[in-house]
Amino acid sequence: MGYQIDARDHSLVRVGRDDQEVAVFRKAGSFIHNLEGEVDGVEYQMKLAAPWTGFRYLLRQGTHELASAKRRGRLHAFEADRPLVRHRLVEFELEVHGRQYRLTPEDRYGLTHALCEGDEQCGGLVMRTFEAQRDGPWQADLQAPSDWPVPLAAFVAWLAREGRGRMGG
View 1 (cartoon, rainbow, N blue to C red):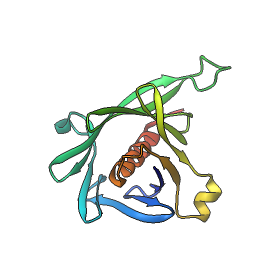
View 2: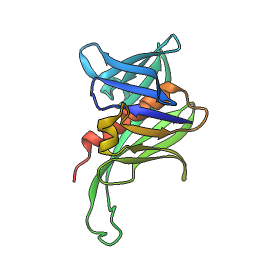
View 3: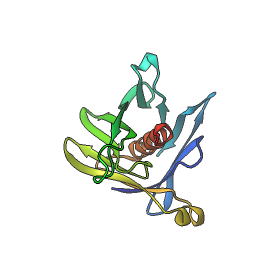
């Protein structure tokens, strides 16, 4: 399923389908990184990793946990001709309805991310060019598994933004 994403403003994540906005997740309370939104009349919350959540990011509908993610950092060589040059990489291990996924940057700047189930890529997030971002309402395009609803698309976009903010050169 294809979605358009805009997470440029750190207090919200917008999700679109067919270039029409379908959901907006906004700052919840005093924590800027906790977001809440409504999709088809149902409220959802995205919670930042904290000690009381086992350092997992959470997507919840009320008290029901829909998805969780754990951040993992490691060093990675993105350039085959320079294997000793390593860059800090932030990836997320997601659990969605008992299935395991991994969201991993494919470049050192976090502009493209692969979404994999096991070793097989099942989707990805690709940032649009600076010109397209400046002249249009969307920042990125997300390809997700066909059974993923809008809140999961927003959750993955939020994680990618969190990861980009923690990557180093």
